[in-house]
Image 1 (cartoon, rainbow, N blue to C red):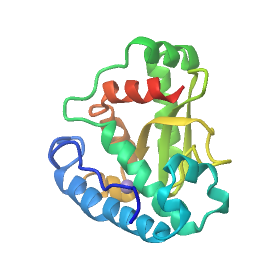
Image 2 (cartoon, rainbow, N blue to C red):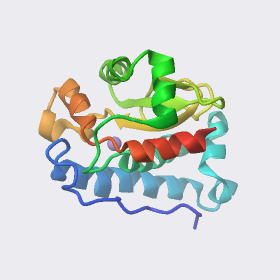
Image 3 (tube, rainbow, N blue to C red):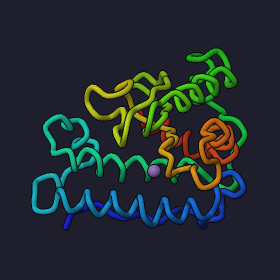
Length: 203
Ligand code: MN3
């Protein structure tokens, strides 16, 4: 047994309709996310990793088995993803996070353009991220597969505070090959309160 938990989805499968459909959410959470969690815990069971903080595991990822990298990444990334969305999401960031976004990108619109481009141009499967460094500066990056920027040498190397899953399993039922439409729709469900909390914890 490890100290890792399969956390509840913080809303119903249909909560993000019409932007992300209920069937996609159900399969994504109960099948994909569950499989990452089960395979991750199986991979670390009986090893010292079972008692470690997942952040520390990621920081040492180059020395870990590929099953830990792929499934630990999948588990962590999806947990973050569920939590930065909400059926009452959308709108704009405010406060210190809005200031950091404006400082880094010039405007909220420019930030969205940069993030959308990172998400749209990630070839194959992966993630787009908004990350914060230790001084509170934010930047956008993307990573392949289930990697994330906490993993040493991957992405921008900072703390992810907002993530978008651009694997086909995240959007294909509703959007088929139209990844840019899914990316546009995502902004309607972004929970900026949750992203702000992630930002405040990041540095
Ligand atoms: Mn996924």
